[in-house]
Length: 226
Image (tube, rainbow, N blue to C red; front, side, top):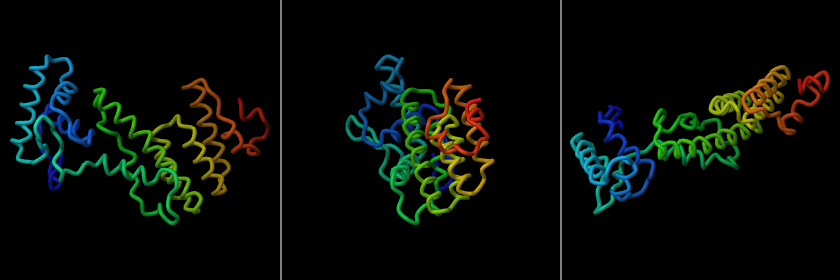
């Protein structure tokens, strides 16, 4: 949590409440918040923990949480970076407007949701955003490649590859970029990198779509499979 670029110091219990409400994006019943955050505690203790966390949030002097009857929500003027990144992912997924892409700040799509938090409610949102962001990065990469903006396309493609090294579609995009730029050696190197990763990590082979991309770049068919 930051205010005017200054970090707002909150104890972990309060941070969990703020994060939980931020991920939900709508009013949540107190009983649900207490039950989700203090799953292993008796109901009475869970409510006591929630009251304590809310008191500490209020004590910080920052209007983060609003209460309405039995429900809690983030205050309307609290900006959630995940909401903005998710909205960006939706705009970029699928059809990207002609001429767009070069000035898009896509870096938020490379970040993790609550890294190192291992609670179920955080893991679900992390995986949901990871999938959405990968689709958005690949869509933007395809658009930039089609527009001939190969340098920008390569940056975006490498970001998608770094986010999920075993995702074949990201490797295929990189192969296509290298080929469009006349770099057959780099295209073949990228193919072999994916092939080796797929075999060692998943016991799988590259798809026919991938093999078709590098067809003609190898001396003989055995170079593709060996």
